[in-house]
Structures are given as C-alpha cells and as structure tokens.
Length: 287
Ligand code: GLU
Image (cartoon, rainbow, N blue to C red; front, side, top):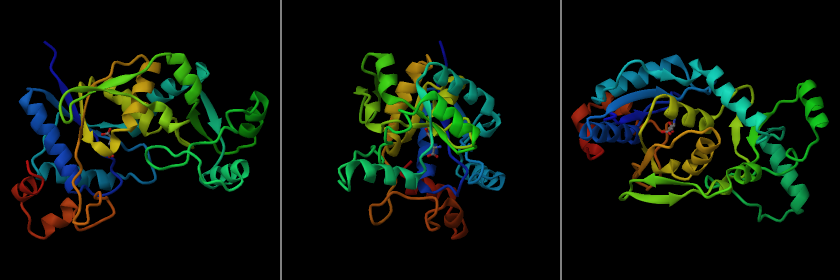
C-alpha cells in the first residue's frame, strides 16, 4: 500500500500568521489521521522577496506551534533547472510565448483596443486578462525584441493549450465533502508560467514539485481554489497525475478580511511576544 504524502508550502516572504498556523496544523492533523508522511516546502522562487532570514523565522515558528515534518525541506530556489526543462517542453510544444507588456503596458494596450470601455475580462483574482498582441507577434519580431534585451515573461497560450488537451479537466475536491470539480483554466487567460528573469512561476513550480515529491493530498487555503484549474491544465500538459485537493476556509480578521503577511498583529511572532503559548494558537485556530 502506498503511504499518502502531505505538504505545507509557505513562501518565506514575510512572517507566518494565524492562517498559516491553521493550514499547517490542519495538514498535520489530516496526515496523522491517514498515517501519512508530512513534508515542508519553501516556495522561495522570488529571490527578491524571499530571504534566508525569513525562512529561518518561519521554521522557528513552525517548530513552536508543534508542526513536524520530514527532512529535507525542499527549496524551490534550488531547483530552477528542473522548472526550466518543463518550461522548455511547453515552449517546444508551441504552447508558450514571450510576453513583453509590463503591468502598465497591459492597461495601455487594453485602453487602445477598447477605447476606454471598462468591460475587459478579469481573472478569478481580479487581474486583467492578458491582451493578445504578443501572441500574434511574428517569430522574427520576437527574436528581435529578445536580442535587443527587452524584458519578457513566458505566458501560456491558453487557447492552444485547451485545444491540445481537447477535453474538459476536473479534480477531486474534499471540501465540504468528496466531489469532482470541473476545471475552468480558460477563466485565467494566458497565465504567466515563467516570470521575468526566472525560468518559472508559482503555477509551474507547484505542479512540478507536488509531482516530484509524490504529494497525494494538497491541503491549502481556498484562496487557491481557482488556481487549481491552471494546475490541472499544466499537469495534463506535462503528463502529471493530480493529487486530491482540500481547499480549507481562511482565517479572517475582525473585519472579515483575509489575513496578510504585512499585518503584524496576527503574526505568530507578535502573538508569541505578547505571551501567547503554542496551545493558545491551536485554540485560536480551532485545532
Ligand atoms: N506558497 C503558497 C503560499 O504561500 C502556497 C502554495 C500552495 O499551497 O499550493 O501562498
């Protein structure tokens, strides 16, 4: 019988807060119930915002709340060649293209094509979908811009990717109970699969790492529910079997807002400094 594998996968770009404590401890509880393995992954692709000092603090905080994991910790920053190979595969399949527009450039381009009409579609996170200009560039123009040193990211050609797959995708979700969810990657438009100066993005790395680490159960916040549609598409394109997904409710602040790493008052650090014990944290998150 294969042993189930869970993972907690924070990004060390700030301090852990009560929401992370809930996610980590829920992973642990579910893993223990299934006699599963529990892994820890640092999603530290963003070398500007993620630092070794923040990672050390996270690890300390995780020990403090009683979260335990198998060694070694996987750091995404140590595996760029692996992501590069997957990116090259998607480029080779003609499903990715270099995208040159900056965030401001996207707005200008949309303004130009819609003449101020503000009905441009947005992705499930609220960002404007990427316009088609760069998808339509000739090979020669792309090569010219790249040789001139114009910065670019790699985007997935969503239409082509969906055509390539040719059938609807879905995943097994266990919240509120086990059921199948139909994936809607098309809602995201041409997503970024490799950021500027990086051979990867969150979406690309997460599906590769979940596969390489043999993850069978992904337990994460429901803020990532819609992103799973993109993950299912990338898994299919890269021949990866999907894990089961459990998108748990988020811990909210007094105003009903999602907690953020930039808010100090709900960080595990500051709660500890104010005298909270690890048991208090478990009670606060209801586990
Ligand atoms: N690294 C992501 C975050 O900290 C979580 C990714 C995941 O669990 O899939 O929000």
